[in-house]
Length: 88
Image (cartoon, rainbow, N blue to C red; front, side):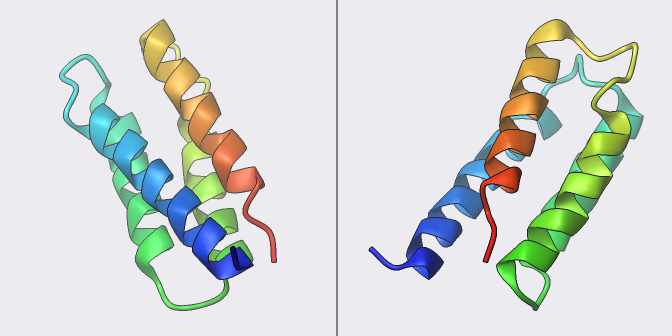
């Protein structure tokens, strides 16, 4: 399997996990805003590493939000891990 296909699958997984958190009422609004911006960054044109870095930056800002439910923090850490694995 080519790297492009692997990276596309990882981005799809990240978007699915972001959607899960966006649809959760217990996730604070500021976190949802950052997640939505990260999702948009993944849809931009450009290389995989640039898009994943932009998304990582957005999500990392809110990953330690004190109002974040513990399970949501785990999902965010998983998202960050997937994004880190996307390198060209």
